[in-house]
Image 1 (cartoon, rainbow, N blue to C red):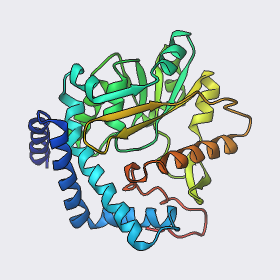
Image 2 (cartoon, helix red, strand yellow):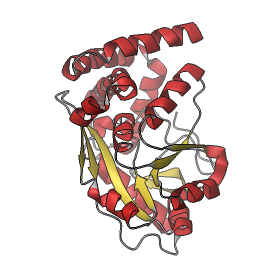
Image 3 (spheres, rainbow, N blue to C red):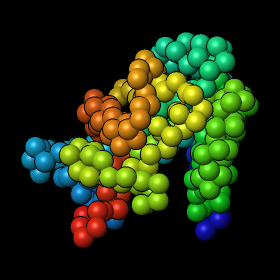
Image 4 (cartoon, one colour):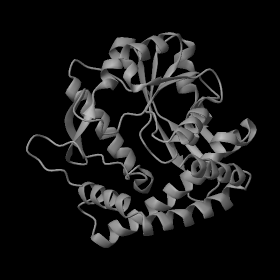
Length: 293
């Protein structure tokens, strides 16, 4: 398995030299193959789209699923660009919109949470923003040690980045933030019942961790939302940094967590094919409710 993984990594290294529009076409083709033969993941995507977009017809959801696998294939092949491309090339390919909204917060000595949902442009934009600010991220170790190594490399190759394991806890994250690092926070995975509550996501009760309001309160942090957007023409990416949230956190953790999910949902609706639908977002269910997968 490790030999195969190293061969895949070697292929990604070779491909990263290609112009991004050509690499994007190859990735789109890979996505078509993943959709055709990746039965298990296709099933997860189909279930998620049925739950989140009941207003769409089955044919419309099928089109959306195919578009999702196209950008998923792109994101896999283009990951080599994030891992090995020069700083100059990455600056050309990934435009950061309103970077001053996070740079100024850290320059003022305030703590920062950069709220970044799981879109396919996540890794490319994460590598790019590390050129602008030092950060801390909570990292889930990958089962494949070869890919784990290179994913960590891609996220930490620029600046002075800190990567914490999920088991390190909130206090370690807050300490890193108080040392002047912004938290690159990915909030929207189903991690089970621990530290989670059920709040709506596309009208479906979703187990959602409550760390965002807790960390924001402990660190006295400003929460700034951001989206990593893959450009459809294969010319690059846009990292869109929004305005800081006002009146957050409140004394109501459930309301704060629901606000986060509502914002993510609104962001997904702007580019639904780019959200990470292959994740089993609704696998943890309220008592007595069967898994939809």
